[in-house]
Length: 448
Image 1 (tube, rainbow, N blue to C red):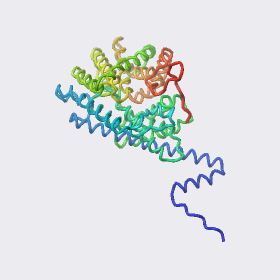
Image 2 (tube, rainbow, N blue to C red):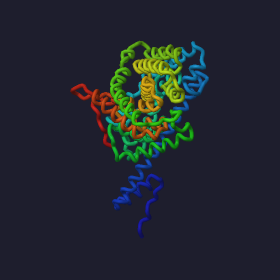
Image 3 (cartoon, rainbow, N blue to C red):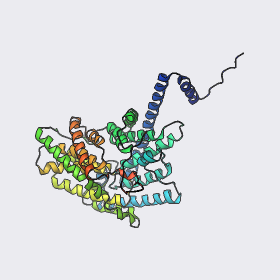
Image 4 (spheres, helix red, strand yellow):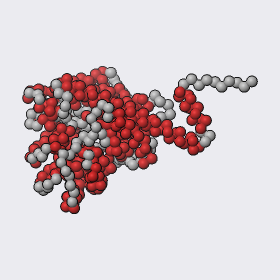
């Protein structure tokens, strides 16, 4: 009598048995592996999307707690008396200082690992505890008006959650899952799924990994789908008014792309020009104080620049107003970066690019300045991040101007080429360590 087959009690065991039996058929085995990888990518996108949504809700709740206003940060600042407008960013910075001291030093958390460095150099492993404490500290800074991008912390937190989950699933390629998680996070926070795919490839992985695009796309659109139930759909910065094109305007857009390419290395230098401020005692408090004082001049200083960008896209602002907001925000963001305020500079860069484009349009007395705001976004992004395809798609997905895609692709390539020829440094090269000799930053492309 034959022995009875042993019972397989768990779903994972059944799945492994199925894959094992199918391995004798190469075509079926490849199909199953691909299906499982796509399933993992979708699950990663869902986890990353939910992490971003949860953190976004926390930010809104903290903002309401400190200001009594859950809308745009500039509106929250305008609703406060002057003394509270000046003091609130300082209070948030003080709380962030305490959280960093408690979470990083008191609890002796492991060393922090940024997601780009984790993918390129550490097999996708991101210690969760230091990211958690940094995220909470960033939440208090951002919710109280720090002139820094909240999206950077959201993407980092989502990547850390994905890494934590991936380490507990045997057989999962963690570097791919982190890149998928970042693609989904970018899709959620910017409502830009295609830009999220190119962000994961160009910035996180360091090159165009076409074989990975299906996984990035599945994760990106899954995260976007999840977010639709909790967040407002895009485009985030729709342009109000028609945008038309003719040969003269195309030529001027190319000129603007050249200018953006020249400004890319300058912008990088400006953002990192106040790094010495990090040596000040209680440096974060100085950053909060600077934001509070500058917001007395223009409330658009608060936040990541989304309010200022929305205002420019909806209202015909005078050129001197755009210049004033740009100068104040550049100083505030630069000082926040220099004092170590936790957050990103992606959205501030988007605002700066649109402001440069609007100023360009105003100086030439052009009838459609919004066209140059869109081109300014993709141009400065491409020059500052060295990611032309991501920048081109980000510009059209943020504004909804898909009719400008070919133009943004061309202008991004021009700006990127000029900036790359002038300097190898980009905003996201901080995660790439220096080689042992030479002292220069080197791009590295990860193989997933």
